[in-house]
Image (cartoon, helix red, strand yellow):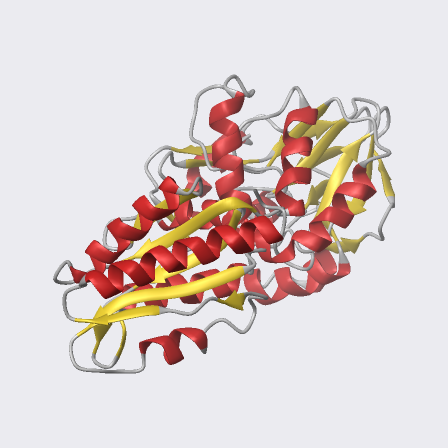
Length: 380
Ligand code: FEO
């Protein structure tokens, strides 16, 4: 059940959705009890409620995650099935009361590992916190060996194919989603993966994107992403106003490539911020390139730096390059914006006006330093 959202291009007014998304819900009809697992995004209410026509009873609405793209229609479902109970973690209960004003008497809270008997089928609830909120859990349908995972293992893809058909496409979309909302919690998510390891999972049914008939593919990918092992790669978010900073970027990119370092430059004036987030999973070094505007970094560079700080990637080194006209505190301001990053700052390269030979030479030195640091740390 649920909706394919072909047209949305932005989630939470933040996350780009180049391929739209889907909000997946699941109806499980046991021989005695019927469960609705999650609901839908509020603006899909009409479509979702139409899907429930012909469903004579719902005993339980399992809410695996309180965010409204999955919980947003619980109130309407309760209006139609007033005898139904909302099953969730104690934390989710508080959030659903706060967010949706669902009256307290509708709730049954479950402990980690608790089971819900549906007759010939059994759901087991497993707490998997911080994917990407504190209350998240997954549900394992024991007889069918299906793991319902909500955001966990999800991907923003709108498609008419229910099951994964192109793993490459899903890998990229799922990695992007992991980077955008889960990267800061990767250590906890690693623990969640360990917790799921003993389960015999034949299928993963997420809350966004397609169902995985080969779960190993996405579980392996999550192991890789949660490890966050830095690679011999520089992420270079940049913005320029009169091409001086752009010339510095072009020179540094060429110098790094010449030295065998992979570079991912992102022009912040046009970039998809989701791709930038995704590249931060792998990069050993971040170089922010910005002109000085009003005595500080360009707002686009400040935005990218703020985002990187919030996402807490595992990058080990950071530097800043850019051109200024008359002065300012660009380096100090950017350096003050990254308290969450455990990075060593490599000496910035700033130049007054158009870059000249001395600046280009300093950029070559910066490329040499990055190579040296990557080698010393085993990233090459
Ligand atoms: Fe798909 Fe965190 O909601």
